[in-house]
Amino acid sequence: MNSQHNLHTPSQRSVSPGFASFLIVFAELLGTSLWFSINSVADNLMSTWDINLAGIGLLTNAVQLGFVAGTLIFAFGGIADRFRPSRIFSICALLGALFNGLFALYADSILLGSVLRFLVGVCLAGIYPIGMKLIITWDPEKASQRLAQLVGMLILGTALPHATRYFGVDWPWQLVILFSSILALLAMIMIFWLGDGPHLKMTGQSNIKPISIRSIFTIPRYRSSAFGYFGHMWEVYAFWAMVPMLVAVTHQISNPTDLSGFAFVVIAMGAVGCFIGGQLSKTISSSRVASYALGLSGLCCLIYPWVKEAPLLLQLLFWAIWGMSAAADSPQLSAISAKACPPEIVGTALTIQNAIGFGITMISIQLCTVLIPYLNNYISWVLLPGPVIGLIVLNRITQSK
Image (cartoon, rainbow, N blue to C red; front, side, top):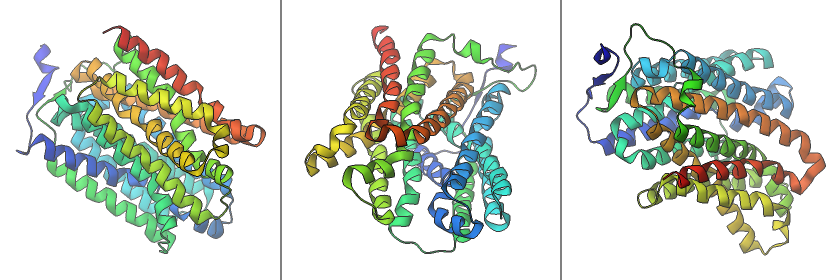
């Protein structure tokens, strides 16, 4: 009877784990380009729709809210572990491309635009966390490295709108958004062709009880890594959202194009941090790598108010370290969570972790937006509790070894 609920599914493609991982990581970059597709055309939207930055923020938060809703649907329904991850990824990439395309062609107001962006966010719940599970089905022994590569691609996608603005790509805003739909369709084709890896374990399709969140959090190692991830998420997205403002204050830069170029470099350094962390995880534990990253980013939060007094070279070094360390812990924490859970519930466990984590980002982003006029340079201290909490819970993992 148990064999019906713990199925081993062979790979559909005879490719090496390394090549499969490359395809998944690249498809993740293409698929998650839907996430920030409107950010590079914010000026055009503001002019065309006669809206302000708050309107752009609403459209961005609609995606975040859709992602959280989608991950909760996946988690409570056990969808992430009941169906093949390659099929989930492919369907969600297709639907995400469709809703994104409808936004480009038909959206003409905040209301309709927010609804379509919300639906894009729901689809992203089947691309980002499911991509994590998919890569583990191909190369579980190198989970830390592979997840580091995958998260690195997500971060590059996050930074890409700033690069687009800096290099002055002057396409009509509808074409820019449609281009991200084309990229998502390419991601769908790649993953549909690749299929699932030889290490996939699925829950049976009949007599299934949805996995309770409470039961997953009874796994001590998962609970510690998840709470470490929540601390990380409190900091990282609010940091990314505020980078242009923080840079403007520190370096007295007012030109929007220059700010976008600087912001791209700072955020993209997170991808470098993920890759370095993945290499370090070969020789030291993922918990150690995550702890070092949390410690460094927490230190950056603490000392930021005085950075503008430092020489320029030290300022640039500071931004590089903060950009790398703020993101480097994410894939390591996800790898710990994946290894802590039974293989047949990994997808649901990662989806739950993502749902709560992205919900937390909405709180910290809103809080920083409200408080920055009052705290000025000291706004970075609002982010500091995240790394501190992460370090405390990660220390429990280290001590339990």
